[in-house]
Amino acid sequence: MAHNPQAPQGPESHDPAGSTQMFRAFVDEGAPRRAQAAPAPAGPRIGLIVGVIAAVVIVAAVAWLALG
Image 1 (cartoon, rainbow, N blue to C red):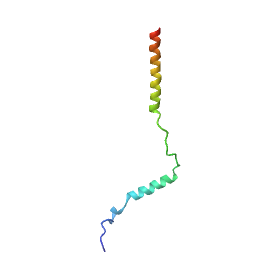
Image 2: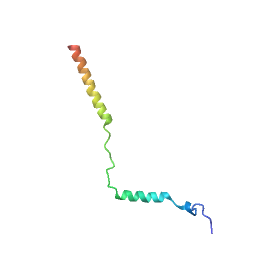
Image 3: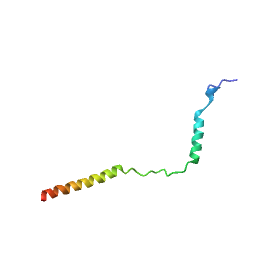
Image 4: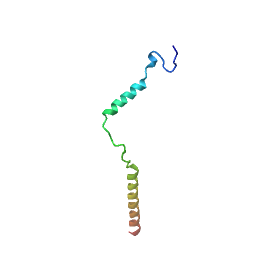
């Protein structure tokens, strides 16, 4: 009988990765399918809009004070 070092005998032969893969396949099977594309975050865009509005308000206030 040839000794195979790739397949240990005893309690070390249990492969938890195989069980994890089977569990993930089971969970994914029952999960509803969702769209892969998520909407882009609006954080930077909102900040840009607020910044432009603030700049317009400041320029208008300076012009009003200069002319008044």
